[in-house]
Amino acid sequence: MKKILFICVHNSCRSQIAEGFGKELGKGIIEVRSGGTEKGHQVDPLAIEVMKERGIDLSEQESKEVDFWDWADRLIVMGCDAEESCPALYVPKLENWDLDNPKGKPIDEYRRVRDLIEEKVRALIKEERKG
Image (tube, rainbow, N blue to C red; front, side):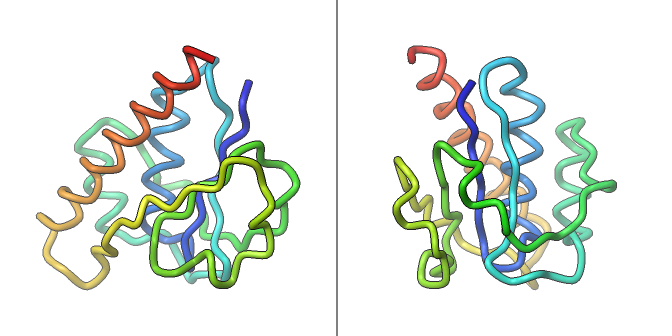
């Protein structure tokens, strides 16, 4: 089972959403974690809210700084130039999904980004199923 690490700067929104979808949709196919290149304060309340709309509860997740780089088989940077402060550029199959950060924007922007992340996670799972 591939180990996927979703990275953004503060691990408060996009990487948390990706982790939520990965855990829910990728059971038995992928193992996922998320983290930030810097420690954030909390998971964004609007990220929690828009994920509840999909039946996924992020309310117990915490923002964390990544200190487990060697754990991952595949590293996915969510955008925000997180790769600039990422010491794990040598991790196999580095990707940058280059997603807009919805922080501070209306909830519809959170929904738009959530839906993009869901599409990308579903494609990732389909790819991993094919092996």
